[in-house]
Structure formats: C-alpha cells, structure tokens
Image 1: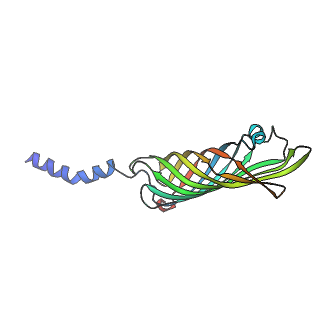
Image 2: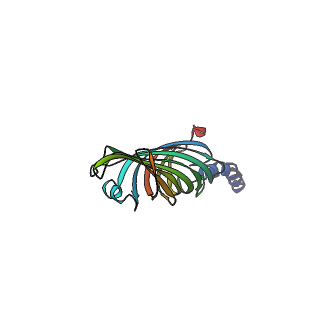
Image 3: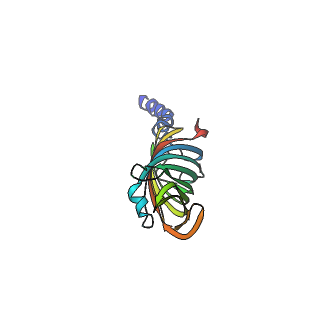
Length: 206
C-alpha cells in the first residue's frame, strides 16, 4: 500500500519536476534590439598609406532583429567607427556600415549560451577629412558593398537580457573613390573586420 501511495505521489510531482529541469533560459523569437561597442580594423592595397597609419578604431553599433523561429532571425544594424589618426596627418577618419542579413542561432532555448552564425550584405562608406595628399590636403571618400560574414555567442543573464560577443568580416567588392567630391573613377579594394561586445534586449519577454 505504501508503495502504491509513493508511486501515485511521484506521478503527481513529475510534471513540476520536469518543468523545473527543462525550463526556458533563452529566446531568439520575436523583436530584439541591441547596443554594442566595437573595435574595427581594415586593410586595403589601394589605400596602403591610410591602412598603415590609421589601421584601427572604435565605435558603436545599433542593431535590431526579428526571430521567426527559435533558430532563424533577420537583422539590420548600423555601425559608426572613428579611426585613430594619431599617426596620420588628417583631421578625421570614420567608417560607416549599414548591414542587413540573416542569423542562425545554434542550440536550444533551454541553454543560456546561444552561439550563432551570420550572413549578410553591408554597404560601407569611409570618409577621411583633410588628409595630406602630395603638397595639399583633400577630403577622400569611398563607398561600396561587401559580403558580411560573422559569428559569436549570446549569454542570457536573465531571459529578456543577453550579453553578446561577436566577430565579423566585411569583404569582397570594390569601393568607388572620390576626392573633394570629384569621382576619380578608381575602384578601391577594402576589407574590414570587427569585434563587438554589448547587450541585447527582447522586449516581448519582459
């Protein structure tokens, strides 16, 4: 009789124990918004002088995403970077990237750590103001598209809030070059790489 009572009690408590064991610890579904800081480096054979003397900088990233499934997500982001011009005779140098793409989130919502991979397209622009160019100073602007390849990991400190660490490359394609707003007709090779750290919020989980 005691054995039957024990088994009956076990059956009653099993669903609650199971729910505690497999509780949701993360989400990638629905709308999310993120803010990140990043470090950017770049390379270019065409702009070798700029590459060697202003090769890195820091900036901010604003990101929005929408998860259609627990794994598949569309995203858009804007990155603005101020490059270090301490070794360059120039007033300023900045990069901007506008990127759209898809993210595949690995693992399940029962895990707080969620690795991911990204694929997208980035429109990139660079502007160097009053940089030494021969015997004078000019504004140099370059614009073009690139393939965006990225990956990283989100860690959910609580269900609506995740810390995000990621890395990405923007490569391929050519950038049209202008000097003092005059199109030179040149097409420059430009590749960028970025490491980002920030926070992502999922408003639907508050």
